[in-house]
Image: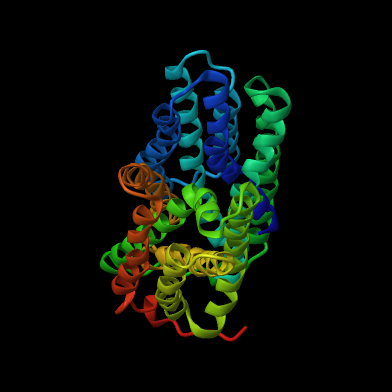
Length: 379
């Protein structure tokens, strides 16, 4: 699981790297904000479209080779983005990276399920790897592009090379453990529960829009609400990522004590006042509410994955592709709408609808039950 978590960090780094490259596209290529947003949208849109396809394929055939290959594809696409001479080629290579990221997640979720052996805490560490990779992207991109400009973007392939090696090592470890496991332990999967899975997916979409929307604008909004400068914005973004990491780890442990569905349901309910605080409360408390919001949004993150797989035990690839990939990408598709509303009104007005989304997620989860009547397990 450690190897899988580290590999996950290497892959999800490229989800954050595309957005981190935007300021350099604007500065060096004189892209308009609309053109720069189009680059981010290209990665999100292609990833969203092909994610369920790869999920369905991994349900039909085990494709562990996808892990190292998709990691390399994701890295190569971003590494080439700084070298392309035309806007169309930039969209193409960024889209290629999005496809690589999309191909990785369904199979990775399936392998992580096998490696974790049903442990919610273990899956939370796998999810944490992705969070840390995403958070690392701006630092890595800034360090490389600030020193060598977009022409240094080929250096961004290094994490992909490391991730591919980690994937191969993790797959060998999982195979060795399974070979030593008594064959009588395996049991046939139960029936798929599509109504519960669709309600869960709807809640995840609500969560995704809130987190990605805040991630895109929190730095600018922090300056307005706290009266601080660039440091206040950077601090808000850092708190947003750190809160997510803490929430991810806490989610697995809380689920072992109280059950997954109650923890997920309460996290959505408690996130409503936290988001309201981010949008409405000025001054020093702003960063406190950012931390609470981020933790609330990420406590259920790894639990979404295991619940989705348990609701669709015969289609764990599809479940992983949707809960870990597709619904995350949907947030990226909604960001331009938030930006357009902010241009027409104000950033505060544009962020205000985010308060209602965790409440909508809670309503979707209100009558959800643990798959197969699973009870909470003491850790």
